[in-house]
Length: 289
Image (cartoon, rainbow, N blue to C red):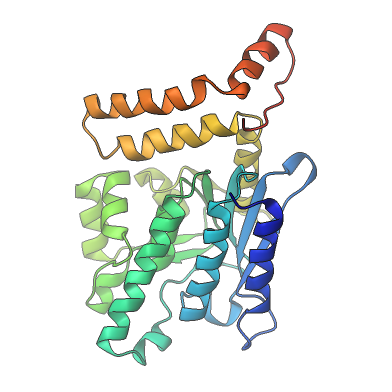
């Protein structure tokens, strides 16, 4: 497995190969320390393109999440924006105009792979939506486990306005989250929702009010991440696996999967530590073993 130092080396590669068109990194990463050790913050920082998903942006994100996949020291990841009033504006349409049809197909397949990579990360991923999350931007948020948005956010799959459809998993994930009928209405109409409306539909877990220019969505995401941190890391990973894979199965098969995931944690040192801590009325000290 990749160590934390290996993860840092991978992130160093990302920094060294950032877009040369701007002095601001397209993707920023920060491993938090102290009481927040185990939280990785991934910040989208492509100001000139409103975090639109260009080839360069895609490569940066692929590198970061590929490195994160193998780092067992991580407990949770927060995906946020460094650009005011925007989470991700979707595909880079200016760049897309210069692509041939074959190139578009290849690029969209890579985007689809990126969303799958985010979805399959072993630790919980929380999207902090602080503004526009449109098209591919919303598809990226839908690939996360938990979504938080500000009330001023603008959220929608708007591809039918461009005579195409969501191509990075949006038709599949949105329908699984809010149901096919509601997903069809939003996709067919290309409707853009506010953060409050997205909360009503169940697209986001929490909608928070904007606070004097502060990143309220990130603050709420960090609050949730801090609630996850004290819990057994293997338990959280197995719970995520059981929920994600179980959603694709019938109830009997899902319960069998749950049994297999439970068997993975029942023999761990962390389980014994949890029982001892409960008996001794103290906080458990989990090591992921």
